[in-house]
Length: 337
Ligand code: UT7
Image (cartoon, rainbow, N blue to C red; front, side, top):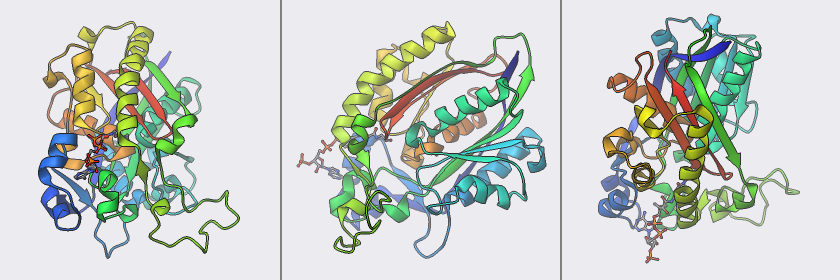
């Protein structure tokens, strides 16, 4: 049976460092509030006067992941690109990034699963590998949030949280009898809570996507979030999906070397750690440096955890877990091969 093995990872970070103190200058917020409520100290945004798309940050991450895997772009037989902030309405960022990698026929699929983009992408890659559709897959998660945020006090609950970044993993199908690769995947979605985290405009369902009677700085053009509702959902659903993913993989928390959660709020991830009764050192955090980078957040955390030497050896077992817009949520148990 073929198993999906991660061969290399990479990251691509937006160039402008924005600290909490920088945000204090443009809206009514404080470093203290942001740190206490979220754990975030800084994030990176693209410059205000330059064109940089998700495909550009994804491209930087992809080049590094390919190098770490010892692969050429031409070795790839499939690209999966996860983003909620594609460069343009269409075509997808996966196509745009593939062209930047010098490719002209490799299939490229965009997925729109927000904070769980990496989990849905990894599960898709695993299914493609197991069914023989592809064997060397590049999975990218990348976001440019900053160009679409409400940078006034009105949007402060959302704007202070998000950062721009890309991250990538190279995944290879390997014939083996060992219990390695994706040991389990548990994915869920509930569109009844779509309104809890959404950007409503522009909307193709309307007679006019950008209604002429709605001002360009109307809140509907920016992401809005019912933060407390999402927070409560996360505290309830993340433990539940963790149980499901662990049962499917036939593991207990003692088998997990590192929990690599989506970086949405440090308090959510600490809460999951407390539920699982593990020391906080077993839960990876890099939200302090990058904020919430949505589809990029788990592969970015994985890349840094591997760079720090925390995981990556054969037999190391990690648990990826996330909840975000959709709502979508899920967990994956992965063992390095
Ligand atoms: O990755 C996608 C999934 N998203 C999440 O997982 C996010 C989940 N939710 C959260 O992380 C938290 O709900 C937030 C960090 C977004 C907000 O924290 P909170 O502790 O739930 O605060 P709150 O929304 O209940 O607001 C508390 C107060 C309010 O003021 P009043 O009404 O008590 O006077 C807000 O207006 O904090 C105020 N506030 C701020 N103050 C300073 C909201 N945002 C800010 C801000 N700076 N940036």
